[in-house]
Image (cartoon, rainbow over all chains, first blue to last red; front, side):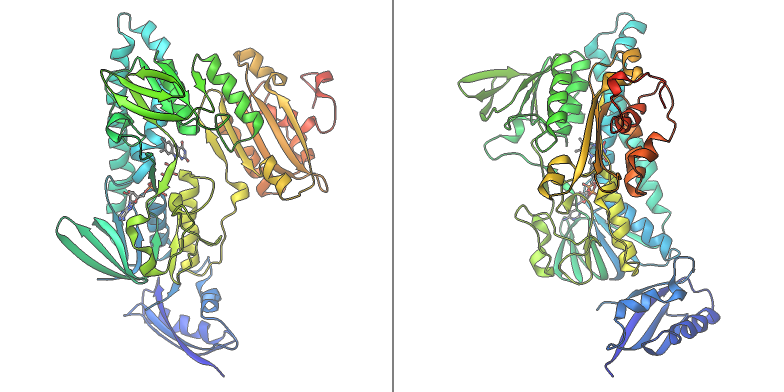
Length: 77
Length: 461
Ligand SMILES: Cc1cc2nc3c(=O)[nH]c(=O)nc-3n(C[C@H](O)[C@H](O)[C@H](O)COP(=O)(O)OP(=O)(O)OC[C@H]3O[C@@H](n4cnc5c(N)ncnc54)[C@H](O)[C@@H]3O)c2cc1C
């Protein structure tokens, strides 16, 4: 396994429940091992197996799809 | 200061990027929008808006002179130019300055931006320097008119400052027979100015098809515009008037407009520090997702390497860049971007050009029909124009459209839909057009693939 932590900036959350919903959806995606989302920080960290998915694939998760109010970018530092 | 997105350049592409990013992020993305000079960049201040205003007004010159008995052409021109500057000012405030202030997530920075590294940008204004850091950066710094080194900029005007002209020039030289030169030249001719266009290439509109070049020349010459092609300017001097030396000749003018092309505003950006690669002329290289060679840096608009330089394309590229920051994976589709030159009649096109189709070895059929085949042209008295369709020989899908016709800028969108949605010649024929309309010329060009249109009744569906 090639574990990588990917930092996300997440937009469109209006409460803590939103963060939980996003976490749950991320965890259903093949290749995402762990996900922590914070409503307060408008941010999240997804731990991925980089042998299975690329960081950008996280943004293709259905929770960020065009009809969802939640949107994310990968934080580049 | 840290931002999710830094946008360098507040013209059409920068604005569309800032607004799209705000919309997608429900107004939460922290954005720095950096610019210098008037907000809105080229299109609103010195490009599309003033040029189309001048053209529109010039079309009414004779009517107005008739209505307002006693007013001279020179007086009318000065009034129009004043009104033009007011319109530009109002458009800038209404469509740019007021709009962006409603986006509380967008911080504006006025100054010259340059890269420190691929994530940091320095903004300098007067003695003040600010350093901004961004997760993503979009470069949308546009382009400026080129002035050849041997020409003293004080002796000529460019599209940057032509709009400050107050007095109607009796004699105007335009150096450069591209779209800007033709549009302004024709408009000025309608105000009564003697216009001479100097073009170094062997035809005006270099790079366009032979049919476009020769028809455009006929249109210009019929309007009384003098065209000197294959003509290299040696020197320009300013005595009582401004004189141009070419070959063994010297001709003098009241004003000279330089319209010889544009260079990208990238030289002062310190792109090497960010690892952004350009072509030999300094235009930024991107893929179709608008990504540059540097991770996290995108580019949009006139500063990007590519043939078309348009407001619409710039705005679209700004949107595509943002969508890809959000991981949408969208690509710009150049085959469906229409272009237009606002001469009378208009010159417009979309899709692949014939020379490119040949170069790429594509198998296609073509039909070119004269404007006289559309009855509306004989009614309106338009003598010049044509429609050309390129069609894929295998499946009869439309690949390219080129039209010279009144209103072509408005109806070229028919070609956009045809190409975007894979319509065939038969789909065009089966779509009833208004009779008698200018847009009918596209349908008649489609019919020419099936029958001899010279023997066709005007009512033939
Ligand atoms: C006379 C004329 C007529 C035209 N007519 C049409 C038309 O009818 N239809 C059409 O579609 N297109 C037309 N165009 C083309 C159109 O105007 C441009 O394609 C479009 O405006 C480009 O937008 P942009 O955002 O790429 O750049 P710009 O609008 O040029 O904006 C770039 C901005 O970046 C700023 N900038 C540059 N460098 C820096 C820096 N280092 N730091 C900070 N800021 C910087 C500039 O000051 C400017 O504000 C015309 C152009 C001209 C000149």
